[in-house]
Length: 240
View 1 (tube, rainbow, N blue to C red):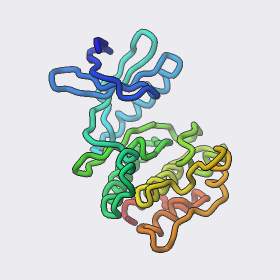
View 2: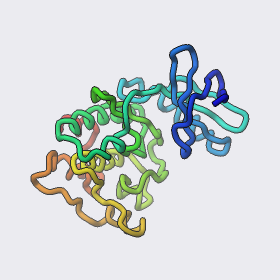
View 3: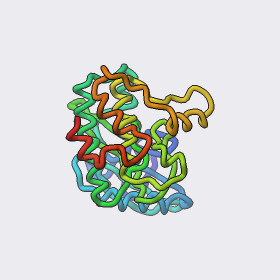
């Protein structure tokens, strides 16, 4: 593939939506390029600025940003490993592995919260795990008070109800992710219309049995009312 973006040479396509490519800059320097057309470039630029304010080892590092002819690009560090969504194709994770992954996710997202950044799209697709269980979180970087919709399987009730997202919304999504790692499925999977899935987040108690590992932690994360959840990601980490 003979394509250059800024100083980077594209090696291969990684995904179509959103557009992402594996690319090389300096010799031995590999990055993941995220591209957006001009209409959405402002959001990507804003998000990249927020990511740079989260200097945490479990947050995917922003290498470079820049403009191209019809949009904007962000070069992110190339993290070794697979997303949690890929890992779950082999079945649920062991409780110990799920805990180690969850603790690192909590640490990364908590670092964002300390800087006023709500992740807003914490899912199994945005968490990369290396063969040694080192975690990198890809930040969607919504700022506090916005209400952009994320993945419907992970959305907090207040998001669905049209209320502003806060750090407590991410804690709900963390509960979904932890449940998914332990069971192999999300608490409220889509079985018909998407409206039914969203209503389940609002009204249906999560199917958390008492003998499920981390049941107490998951239940509290998945509380319908934000004030009944853990107050911080640090508190979730400590409870695990």
